Length: 120
Ligand code: HEC
Image 1 (cartoon, rainbow, N blue to C red):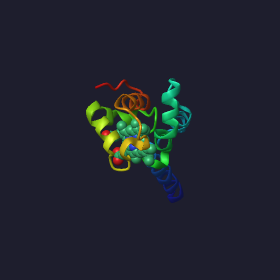
Image 2 (cartoon, rainbow, N blue to C red):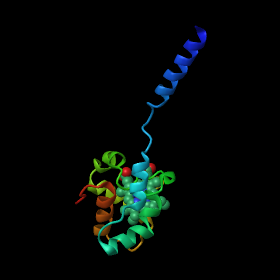
Image 3 (cartoon, protein in one colour):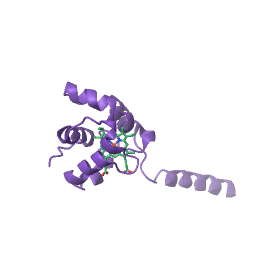
Image 4 (cartoon, protein in one colour):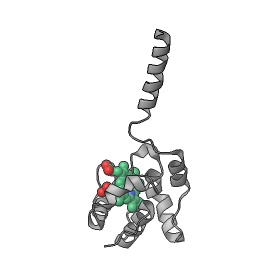
């Protein structure tokens, strides 16, 4: 029956449309929104700068704790990550809006956000 075929097509189309780029799971968003470095001083810096974008899915920044999003970036190596954090990179503003941050702090913040130890 044509009606059934149409219904089957709709189901297949719905299933296929779910196969595109994986959307960020709500868990990742919530995790990103609630995450904070355990070090109090670093947590303060994070809250005043990186968090504004890296915990906001609309900013286009790799979310804190989203290992998948950070993986290709981490593979660039610590030098490139540090260079992009300090000098900026597309939508990533120079110094990530933390003008007083040291290289050590940037490395600690990137380690925290990517969930991996980033060292030079
Ligand atoms: C105004 C928003 C904003 C703030 C604040 C911000 N970032 Fe970003 N960041 C971005 C965006 C957007 C990207 C993705 C850039 C791209 O890949 O095009 C990004 C990417 C990055 C990357 C990956 C660069 C690469 O080579 O892939 C690092 C590292 C980074 N940010 C570190 C930081 C740190 C550390 C802070 C806090 C000190 C910070 N960011 C604050 C928006 C921001």
